Length: 160
Ligand code: SME
Image: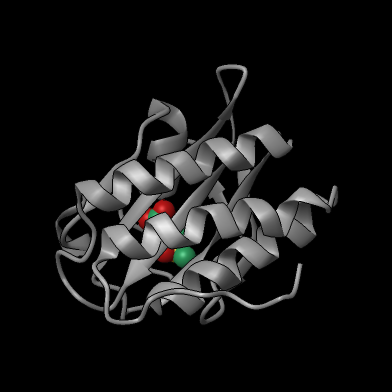
């Protein structure tokens, strides 16, 4: 397909996700390389929602290691159970953080980041990575983001 996204700019967040997810599926359908696909998925999310930071951490032995991302440079390794990402990995659950300063143990890669959502990518009941989205605004992520980003996480798990 042509490398162009069609996202209705004036529509609601739900409409944007509804437009985006099928295009992401199409975008990655012809490509087997995981890094290439994660890179494009991160870019598609950034292009659609313009979040401060969006990217992936991938499980490597007992740590999460920074993968493809869009935004400022970030910490490269996160231990299991540490920060929002490591906690999402440990608990196998999405974590929505309305105010990062109120999350005990939050890892501040960027002081501009104010709220965050981390979605685990689960394959055969094992977390293989996490999708981390950060906003410079408080209370930025909600149930809508959780629902659609979990669908996206399932699409990604199916790739691996
Ligand atoms: N805030 C995350 C660390 C990753 S950065 O936000 C890119 C955490 O607490 O796990």
